[in-house]
Length: 233
Image: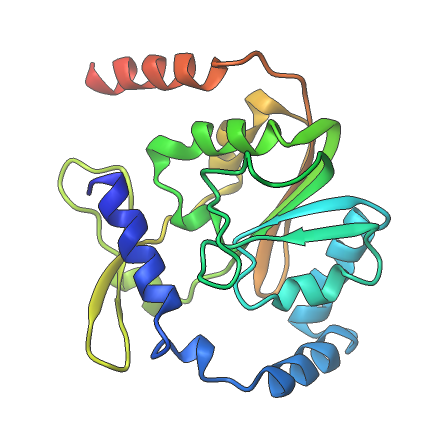
């Protein structure tokens, strides 16, 4: 699937007012998040605790924040949070972070990595790290998928990415990249650009944390060319 077409389809799916995520009352969702995040043992409490520990006092750049569920969890402990999303309300694309004001010493992305095409992992990380100070903390989390969800994933012939079919209440259908990652796969993606890389799997989410290392400009392009050559063999 062409990157531009896919990016447009992803925005159309998530931003459409018929998407269920927009049908929840903001005040009701906020109360739900606050209650679950403060309830020891709840899956949201587990992730909230890890987020607050990792990002306390940091100047945080949050990618693909959606409705701000996880922004709400960290905003009172972080030093500063710039929550971004490619939505009509916020309009800052994860592949175009140059316009994000200032420099950051932390980054957060929950349920975003699985939607990034495999071919763009290195590009995305390069763009993200350009906005971060050396030694910045990065927290990336993905939700666990049920057996039923996994069974419905499909991979088009010749493509490295898995997709799920999504249907909006208005009947429009979308094919959304929904990759799954093992601990080893995450290591291969992040180890070349990270130090102090850690992995954790809990009730409902898995996440990694790491610190950024200094990178040479254009490094991700060289790695993409190397990977492309290896895949072609």
